[in-house]
Length: 469
Image (cartoon, rainbow, N blue to C red; front, top):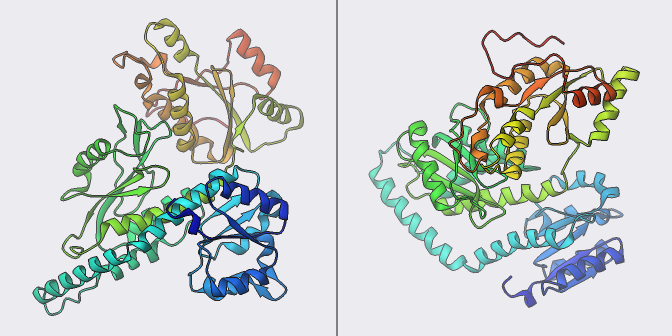
C-alpha cells in the first residue's frame, strides 16, 4: 500500500483483546491503528481529523442518545468505515445496511485476509484522489466536447453530460448485499438503462476454464453460449478470452460491441459485460470510470459474501442417512423426495479408458456447480463415495427439477475432462437417476448389491413420463 506510515486507522471496539488482534493484523502490513473505547472519543477526534479507515464494532454504534450514523462526516459520506462483528453480534448488522460502508470484518474468519480486501478497495480510492488533477483535466476536455456536440445536434436535443448519464445508471443499480443480488441488480440496471440496446454478462467459472453466461432474463438480456478456455484464466478474464467472448457476442448482440470489465478478486475481471449501446449519445462517456464504479460495488458484494457463506445445501453422508431414516421411521420431512444420482456408468468408462487421463478435480467442481445452478427449488445433496450423489428434492418443485436434471445429465460436456477430448461418450456412459425407498439400510443394501430399483433413463425425451410423486 502507498504511504503506509501516513495511513491512519481508527478502531472503535468493545473488547480491548479483540482490538489488539485487529491492531496486530494491521501492524503485520505496516499500518498502526489508534484504539477508541467510546463513541464519544471517536466522535470528537473525527471532527478535527478524518482517519483513512475506521473499523467500528457493531456493539459500539450507539452511546446513549449519540448514534454513529448521525456523525456529520458519516452523513456526508466523507468518512471511510467498515464494521466488525462476531457470530453472537451478527443480528446487529441490520442497523448497518443503510450506511455507505466498505464491508464487514468477522472475528471468526481470518482477520488479515478480510482487512487486505478492504484496504485494496480503499487504496484504490486514495489513488484516484491523488490523481484528481488529471481527472479534472479529463472532465474539462469532456465538457469542451459536449459543447461541440451540442452545437451540432438538433435544437430540440438536450444534451446530458456524461456524469448525469452515469448517475442515472447507478441509481438503477442501487446497493447489493451479496454477489447474487449484485448480479441481479446489474442485469436489471442495464435492462432499464435507455442507452443500452442489448447486452449479456459472462462470468468466469470456479476452475477458471470456462466462461458462462449469467442465467438472467429481461427485454435486453441475451444468453450467450458457454466458452471453454484452452488456457485457464487464473488471474481473471484475460485478453484472449475477452476477444473470444466479443467475437461470439456479435451474432447475438449485433452492431458494435463494447466490453466492460467488472473486477473483484484479480487483476482482470471476474465478470465481463458485453453490450450494444447508443454510442452517439455516449460519445464522451468515461467507460473506464464506469467500469471502476461498478467494480467497487462488486468488491463490496464480495466482502459481504464472506459473512454469508452457507453450506446448508450440502450434507455429510451421515447427515443424509439420518434424513433418510427420519423419513422412514418418523414420516418427517414429507416435503422431500429422495433420488440417487448414480455416477457408476461414467466411472466404468473411466476405468475402461484408463490410458486417457481423467481430470477429477475439475470435473466434480464444474459438475457440482452446474448441478446446483440447474435446480430451481430447494434441495439438499450428499456425496456417497465417488459413485453416488444423494438428492433430496422439494416435492413442490419435483416435476420441473426432475426433468431439468435429466436434461443436465444428458447435455453436460463430460468429454472435456478427459485428456484426449475426442473420446466418444454414449448415453449408456452417462450418469443416471435412480429411486429407492427412503431408508439408510435399504440404500446401503442397494448400493452393495448393485440392484438399484426403478432405474430411470437420463436421456430427455418428449414422451418421457412426468415423475410420479
